[in-house]
Length: 220
Image: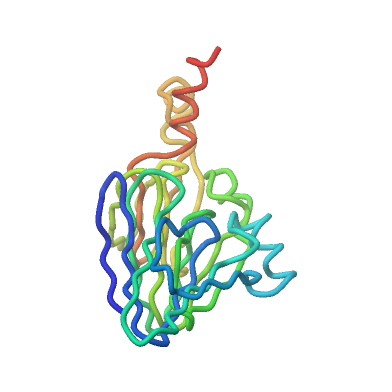
């Protein structure tokens, strides 16, 4: 399997060249084009009950698509995310990552999915009550609205609510006011996420909630 991410940072897409016998698993609406002789099978995302939980609690689709190359030569499928922005990949070698709801695009078959309670703090941070976890061995592709910035944290770091895309599970997430009460309320920042620990986080440079707040007054 050979892959490239092109079109970033605004309109990223993922080219996946499957060798004979290889499979890639993608969100139900992620395929933008594919070779006509690739085999496409829709399957429940981890079984019926697990799929229901991932859809309604983790922001993922009920079904995922399995693209398999049953020919004798390499074939390409091109995958995209639902919002404009950038995409990245994670190479898993036994470790685990946490993804915000809706960030997952695709993965190789040996990747395991999980859904974990993120807590009320995560809900206040506009990251959802539950978090999607990916683990095992293989490749995961994810994306978000805007550009994606990686940051190695060793100690504490502040991220505005709705901007945290991915993080390693040992990171501790807390919610606080951006500054004092007056400054937080009238300075427009409100709540922010305080990440504590040592590990990697990924931040999106734009948020859909911020876009909605900007667009909605123009619609009235």
